Length: 395
Image (cartoon, rainbow, N blue to C red; front, top):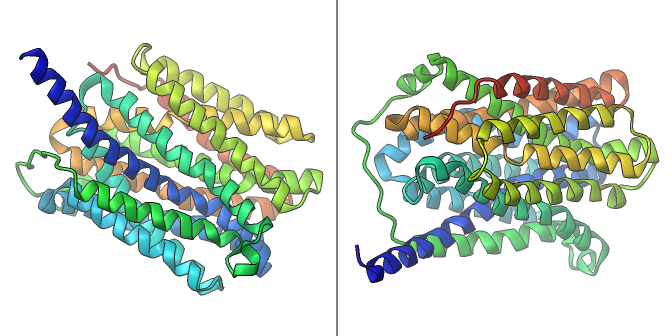
């Protein structure tokens, strides 16, 4: 291939890569649920278990829609499925602008969960049409870095909206939904205008065939690993401000910065991981990340000062930043002929975002302290320590 042809190929790939990364940014909108649920809890006077229903509801839909989305991709293609997910997400972001009562928010979070379930199931496999082999994990990690930027900005935008002129405009912290809806519409336009060549599947699978893949021990291990990852992610996002409010008696507007700390370090971890995963074995980096989270859980059990709590939250953010990408890449490369189906199963594992917050809410109410929530997350970390031993070398 000539130098000119190589340059043109690289330029074409870059033009495809940018809209796909913009979609990863839109994927991060689901993480606003932690910030939004805290504000809704304050506005409506809800208990921890009632407020934790919102993130649980968002991730409940991953259980229902992930595997059918894998089948849908076989019929209409990955790009069209991503476009569908963006459309559903845009609608979910517009609903809270009409009102913030309990049922409006339940409907918005449900649609946000449905859109994100479809997006995460289809967008990650779409990346394999651009990148494959040993670079897949680092590329997915870079996508998670872009996603984490949206996650990181959510509490900052919400706090800005709650403390500026936005309350007088009837938006307050809900200006977050307006801004992200605009970005979502931009993502739809960019991806729709981008040509991406996809390989067509040899056959169309059914739901039963997809679920049978869980009989494979390694696929099941990956599925449970994804559940633990997202449980820790959503759990920290939701619980971090509550730990500060409980132990230091700070108001939500100040305690909410803890969520920002988490996403700052998760974003940094994704950025660093995108490069390190090209140079060091995934197993080593994954193991280091999980040990970091284990130490952080110990800190959050006993911390009673702001710097120490921030340290624990930051360690969880950095440690959890690359867990999803490594597990997802491991699952896809272990079953190259069934990537759409495996993707659906792995994203169904995000149902952990429903299981963990509910369990954490009840545990916190039972002991009347956030240590109950931390204990539930610690169980997930223990499983990830076990999973580290099972990671395979990707060629």
